[in-house]
Length: 125
Image 1 (tube, rainbow, N blue to C red):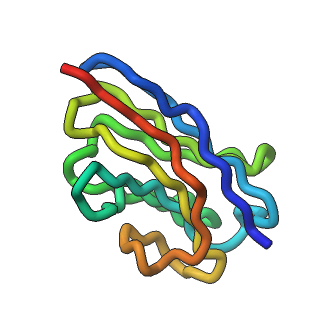
Image 2: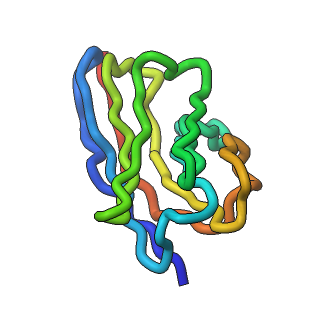
Image 3: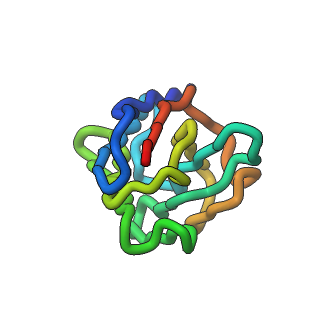
């Protein structure tokens, strides 16, 4: 059974940085893809960043390009999201997810079948 545990969420001022971590068990990063999603209050969950783990091919939603960086550490079974130049609109609950059978990256929520519980990010102006 795949389990994902996020950490690193916090409250920061606009312009600040945070690094989120997602530690996986039951998943080795050799296949499939992983993604970071976020959900702001009253809004739908959206894909933020994704990585196809065998090749480390990456994609981002437009609003975070140049500010966020997704990466993986296979030895630690951990996915990261480095978030720089944070804005108030980045506020939300951040989730990591994995699809062990995907053959490419995806920012679509319905591509994923395992989800973590989320970690809260709050950015104040």
